[in-house]
Length: 271
Image 1 (cartoon, rainbow, N blue to C red):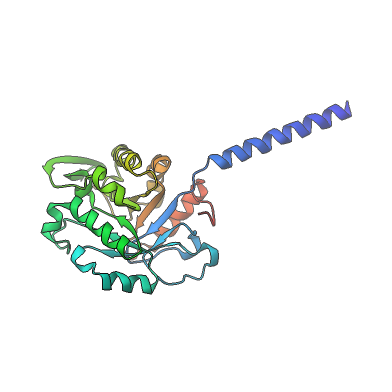
Image 2 (tube, rainbow, N blue to C red):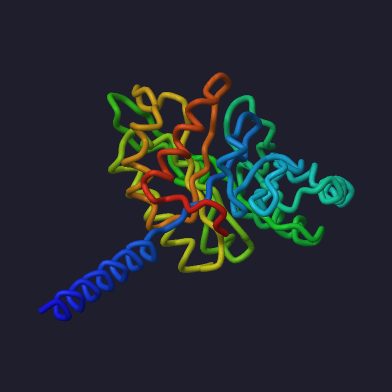
């Protein structure tokens, strides 16, 4: 009887161990990106994460491997300018084309975002660097939008947009600026799934980020806790979360990355 009991305990322990291993294997560790000037929680970063700095953060093997510098205008992406960024320690270049009134992207580039995204990628690769595209919401979706009462309504107003089927093969990574929809969980998931599927189909090796921000969206205040359901919903289809942090919102970034870890979406030191 004692022998049988010991055998049963061992079998149960083995089953629990296997279940735990399966659960851990099923978890997806997401990268985080801090690709805008401002605060990032250094002590919470992993080797696969992205930061807008070429500095050594003193994290040893956990030092973020994606060190990015942005351009908003391809005419500024001269061989000399790109060589300088490479010498400084950047290994990724971002083309952040925006159609905002005060943004420096030329109107000619906004009129044909696919053409200039491909050009930016070619210039970057010629300099021996990796390329990340970051078209803003309108240039990704091809429509304007308005937000109210926590919902995002896509307008009938159309604008030229990046054709992922054409530009996708040239990209090493892309960051979907869908934070405008983050308060509307259903719309955020729908759009993220749509563009992630398009990108995976044309370039399965590209790293895909989707963005969130500390700013209020669609008339709804943004909090780290409030954004977690949206982040967890898109986790299966993206590789990382790009976190935009407004000035004086440092706690937002720290809390959000911490919550992602508690939800099993971050594995320390991974990638």
